[in-house]
Amino acid sequence: MAYMEWDSGLETGINIIDSQHRQIVEYINRLYAAIRLRDRDGILVVLEEVVNYTSSHFSFEEEMMKEAGYPHYEAHCQVHRSFELRVQGYRERMERGEDIAKQLLSDLRIWLSNHIKNEDLDYTNTVLLYFHGRSDTGWYGKTIGRLFRN
Image: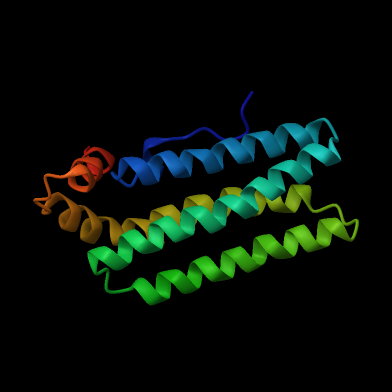
């Protein structure tokens, strides 16, 4: 049984972003399973994946927002930096031997829902309008078209 299910309320309408956000749900469910099994190594693996994920996902999202000219780009980046620091803090605490798993699980679930429904949905119109309006016919334009098609 999954701890968290993806639902349409988490969709941004940007296929590539929704796919990346689904990965967070996968991490949440794997973390939940590791907690139930009391698998410290499994918890650590998921935590490391979340650390790596936040860096790559946030970089992708920020480049997309920047290119589209999202007016609240800087503020959104600050939200990302804050969450990255929080995740790094979980890693440091776990390395010191603290049991952070349940707190991390709760934090990830709450953050995912709140961040998508508030900050991420705020940039989607800007990004969708920008990328749908592009007339590139080369590889880049075709790729972007596939990634942003509803």
